[in-house]
Image (cartoon, rainbow, N blue to C red):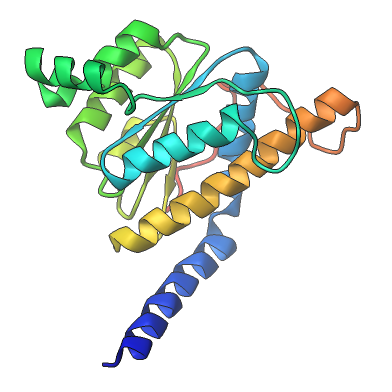
Amino acid sequence: MTDIELLKTSLKSAMAVYQNVLDNETDCITHIATKLGDILEAGGTIYLCGNGGSAADAQHIAAEFVGRFLRERKALPAQALTVNTSILTAIGNDYDFSQIFSRQVKAMVTAKDALVGISTSGKSVNVLEAIKEAKKIGALTVAFTGFPGEPLASACDLAFKAPTKETPRIQEVHIAAWHGICDIIERRVHEQETGNFSGQRRGDHRGSQLPLAS
């Protein structure tokens, strides 16, 4: 296989996953956007955690909320639990690597907040421990994973499972989904600030929920 053929194969694989999401997962993604928008509107914060590329995604997403995505609007509270190296190394050294996120959840997350756990495999122990603590607190928990994405998907209130087992494709579609979520939430905030409303009525984040995405 030539370099060009290899690249085309990769791009075709990515396009197939995107098409699957377009055909089957848009309700799930927009539902998550609505619930996270409710959290922010009620004065809560979105916390995010993950390892490796998922840690980078957590930081990327937090930056989109705190800064801006496409529209000028107020800053929105979001924080990646992956950025303070002193906290991460202290907890990893004094307790265990599995506790690097859950200890932070205990310190900062409240019942009015949301915790997003990002894990392409759905098996990251430190992410699962963080979700466990967030649920004890009463925060909304959201999983971003791949397929089948267990046990993380079932551990959370809401879950988006990228319809593939290939890690690069999972990571790519996660960012695409998050950009869509940022766009939806930012439009909602912009409409509230300008008084120009076009979105649907929103409810409490503990209201009815869609089934987990397949």
